[in-house]
Length: 446
Image (cartoon, rainbow, N blue to C red; front, side, top):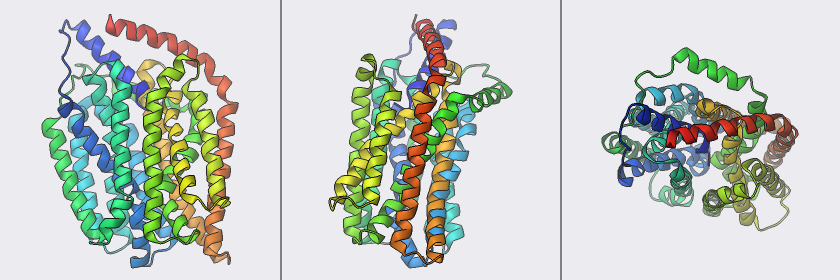
């Protein structure tokens, strides 16, 4: 569902180019070439994103890291990933997903190797940042390639398959990762991931199909003017606070602070912690699949993506409050519910892109992605810095964790209220651009 807006834009452009050039309809490439290489890359991307949920506590103990230090080195992935998004859109348009993504995956492989070999925080953070840069195209590159290879009627299901691959990566980074740590060290694990990422790069470069690109792509200056239009839009800033605190906040928690909470506040061992993370990630995967299955049919009944975000966000926030207040001893159920409800945050992307003209849809999504991932960096690092600051003032470690989780829940609630308050400001733009998109699709398929 994140893909629907940019995918429709790219489908319309590809179909229009073939029509105006008198080219015959193109047969879609085999699924094993057009989907599986991108799915494998996104599996690794999500595994890297969430690996420190299990490995982070090991790093903290082995290297005697503070909460701020472990937060910074884990969050370096998000900062590099987020800052890459805007230039990434230009690169994908000019060179195609196969070339761009396979090249960047080599940077991710190098980053995993640096992480595996580094003795201190600086090297670990640099390696993690290089991994974030290297996998920054794995999702958007897949969407770009899918929009060229397949028609609009298949985009939702293809997005579901990619999100499923990511969910499997998150699951692999939880209990399977904890089991692997019983037999080998984290350095060996990241060395193996470096090799796997290099193999994924070669697979994608050698097997993924090439896209047709326009002979005269839009001028770079015009592309950046479009980005400026997005950042000046009230509808964009309606979505940013919720994207940062809700989607980015969940990334920060899932990637590190959930495991710290389970170990420090609940007092669980690492095996129980890993089972909780697995349950959360399995529920997240099920949530993605459910959204993909029901969102289209609900939209036909007048229940749009904005309604789903408006309902899913408060459910997730309420679940986070139940976790913080330790309202029930059934903590596994709460963490699974958090993973399931937070899936509604992915629908912010089509909500954000809908008010914009079709030619800006892709840039609207990447612009929101920048804020989400930079926000995830700030929250993940900021929570660690907050814990250290509160402990320095004499607060206990468990209470310091409770305080920063409370701060996140309050920020999410305020962002949700802002999202609802500004709903009316975007309705006219949405209606205007919905008509324009219908005209574009009719021209592309006519």
